[in-house]
Image (cartoon, rainbow, N blue to C red):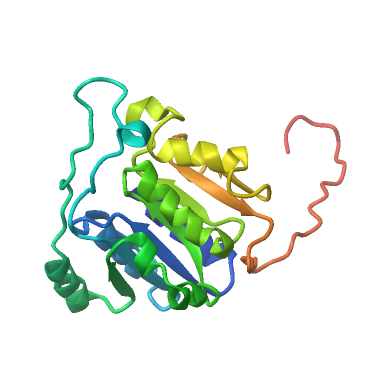
Length: 232
């Protein structure tokens, strides 16, 4: 969860405007409510809108080709990770005002009207915790034009099947970087924000509808020669 603070702090300090955080696979809200708290702790509630997407019915039927376990006994199980939508809505509503829960399939809840809001609240963090390749790729198919370069993408279950490119979230990463969804997009690992894990990536999108804007433009940081000492 510490990744959340690092990402939000980076956008608070370095970028202009307002932001959104999109979480796909909310379940019971364990990570979602921690994100809301992080924005409050960092005094960013007025700049960040949080959106949680889930059917709240648990995992769908499993496609063994795209999401099956590569070792026996490690399969996903349909119906697990079922959330409590009404309870989560009430809990968050009593404490926070900068959130919205979207109940339903991703392809139904990522509407044109919602996507249009992302131009004002530009995605800072997209949190992929929907476990399955099919769910993950359905998100990207709809979101790609609306993801500006520099947006952080977090994959919670990237280690499934040893991070093999044949299944799960890593299969989606592989297909994106192979060019299956356009030649102008790429997922680049961010080792700094991810603390040397392979869960966090920066999205590169040459054809995005809009881009993030830095608070300060690049300066001339030329170091002038000194006395040749090995010390600064």
